[in-house]
Image (tube, rainbow, N blue to C red; front, side):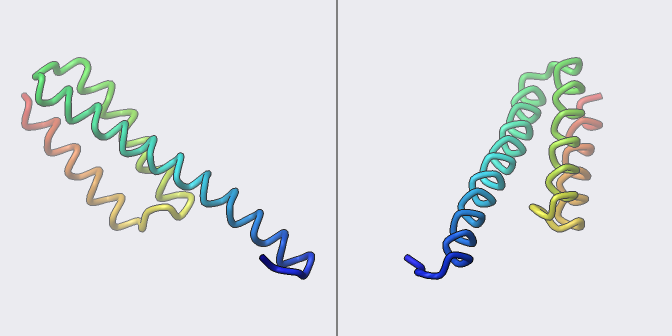
Length: 87
């Protein structure tokens, strides 16, 4: 445990950022899993709604630096291909 006041604050800030990032990444993964479950079930309407939510979650993760922009683009491309394959 640090003794310097600013170092103590850094530890707190780091912990808060860790929890925030963890929650956002978990929400993104959940949205993607819901979309993939809808695709497996074959429900196009539900899959379309879940697709929109999953893409939004991926975009937000890329915007905040949680994902690299190319990683986000790859994930979105993969989701789009799965949605289009349902038709």
